[in-house]
Image (tube, rainbow, N blue to C red):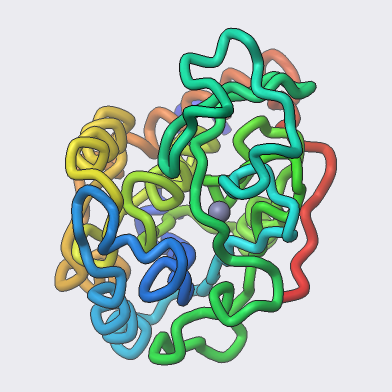
Length: 288
Ligand SMILES: [Zn+2]
């Protein structure tokens, strides 16, 4: 079998039978009506708006797997502004500890030294605020992924913490299912949804961000998120377009292009050696 024929075969398999996964990010009480209610953030969007279109997708689209992520912090988490006195702010931090307000970004001394946005205390493990919203459908067989369980580092992406010290089980689960396409949405658009979509693209998944199933914090950052996703061969769609895409009736040129890039990369990896291992040796477990 020639190289060309082999790559065509991979391409045909993915196009004929993509394995489509739905990733619902952080649709938790605290982001909707609790301590980090995003309607009080700059964009003033209502997190509850995502529940109905997400439920409709769960009812009408046959995804191969469904994942729900949960921000799942210990009480002493680095992102909580009320924990600021317990860690040293680095002298290079543009905002000093004594001046820091909620939503400001400081630089912690660490190690590792890191930038951190300061959020209100939110999504504390086993609290009401960390529960998925009661109206969100949780389908049978779905898998929950917890993130942000390490007190010392924040976690926006559902794949890794912000320093890539720890990974969640998401990528292992996706690999086990031979997932090719990821449909991602939820809260908050420009924070955890965006970071997860970008990591999915970097790993090599064909990635679709569902616009009307996501709400965010800051309009400029939401726009930047969309641009970055599209620049990296991801696709932004509305929920009414998803069913036709999952069923293969609506085929996007961008996703075909993304697939071609990934097949080329795999061939190069195979020619040189194995692909580099994914970072994050420690695995975050989930007891939500
Ligand atoms: Zn958090």
